[in-house]
Length: 235
Image 1: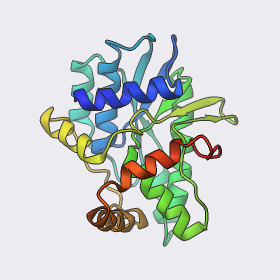
Image 2 (image 1 turned 30 degrees about the vertical axis):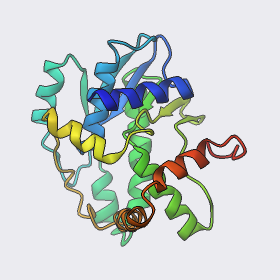
Image 3 (image 1 turned 90 degrees about the vertical axis):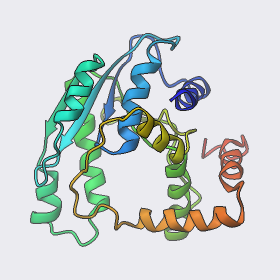
Image 4 (image 1 turned 135 degrees about the vertical axis):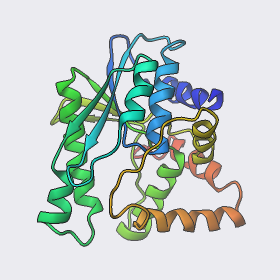
């Protein structure tokens, strides 16, 4: 967990993610990344220069209800406020719209629901559990499927909702997160999504693994490119 906290601290210092008085909603899907972020943000409160609050928020998708009992118990033991927001997103995507490629619509609906839930909880920021492997996979997908050299930013202002979205784990690698979750026995649970594990992102994960086998420093090279000041439209 020490290494993960170091990544959170570096991202905070590099991009000015957290300020005094912030109340940050941590989106908790139940997967390893969001659980690690929730715990990391709780621990970071002890040595962050800024004083901030957090609240964990899980979206109940309606069609498939997550078992959040263990997570709720974990939050209570660690003095983390926790909220489950009911939605009908699963029903809309899979029953009403019957989407053959559901991820884009689902992502948009979840984003809006999470932002609304965060605002209702009095938050001015939302923290998401994206790590550097997600950054890299998004970059590759954008290049291959859209013809653009693009990926998400560490911090984004959503002007329609007047809320900031931060990604404190952008410097962390997925393997580091997996190790932290296992060592600390963090309460991971399945999302229940029918499309889980069969998305284009999973396919891209496999492609990136093959590239790294041949070019072991691939991730470090991409990070250097993203932070290059000449690429002003990126980081």
